[in-house]
Length: 62
Image (tube, rainbow, N blue to C red; front, top):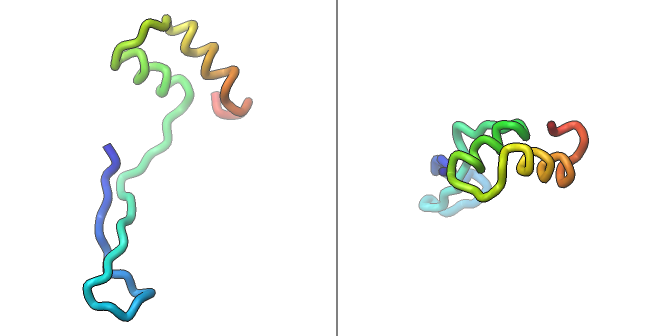
């Protein structure tokens, strides 16, 4: 779930103009993404999912 907050938009003169900004955002490692995929249910094994992640991601992300 993406958490967000609304802030007054100071770039416009309208008093009722707001902008959304994400809060509590975090980054996940490749291994954490594979674990979350498998936790939610998948027909892939952990080894299959890790191989897929390694082949589709930039080298430094794992």
